[in-house]
Length: 80
Image 1 (spheres, one colour):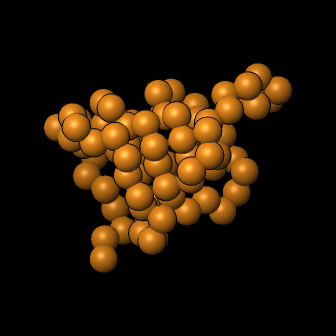
Image 2 (spheres, helix red, strand yellow):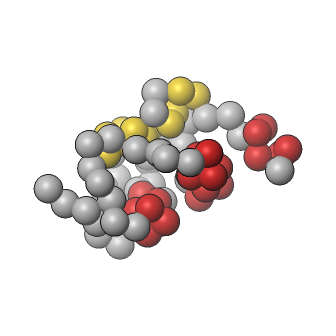
Image 3 (cartoon, helix red, strand yellow):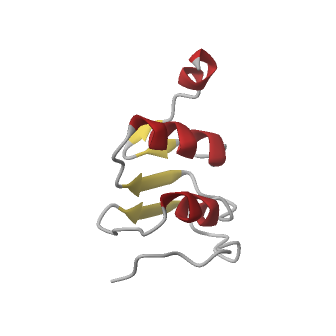
C-alpha cells in the first residue's frame, strides 16, 4: 500500500485513466498536484469526502473529463 504519489508524474504520457479509489492518500492537495503533471489524464477515480474536494479537482485538473465515472461539469464552478 502507498499513501503518497511522486511529485512529478509527467513521464506517464500514455496514462489516460487512473483509479485511486482504494488508496488512502495522506495529503489530498499534494496528490492532486501530482496528478496534474500527467499530460493526458482524462478520467480519475478517487475517494472524495467533501464537496470542496470535487471543486478543487476540477480547478486543478482542467483537462479531466470524468471524475469517479461522471462527466466533469465545469459550469458548477461559475456559481461560486
